Length: 92
Image 1 (tube, helix red, strand yellow):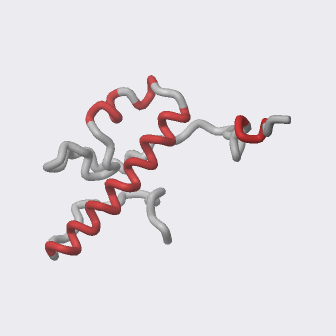
Image 2 (tube, rainbow, N blue to C red; image 1 turned 60 degrees about the vertical axis):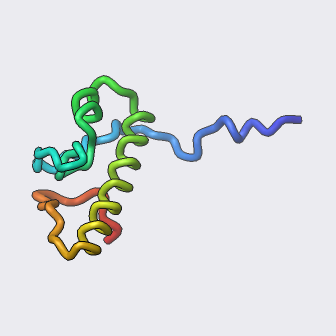
């Protein structure tokens, strides 16, 4: 008997994954947006990819933001992220 639960997603997704854009559209030194931390290609093709890919992109953005915050703390420079709306990546 095989376990079919491994092919079932852990949570059903009923809603489209929203764009992580916060309206701060400026490329940083590593080529990622200073506002949402997406690459140029991730921003360009956002509306062409499926929700699974969007979730993957959002997860990557979250990691990039955390890394940028750590670098900013190590160099004592302020973070360039200026949220203009609720930040969907914060742990608060």
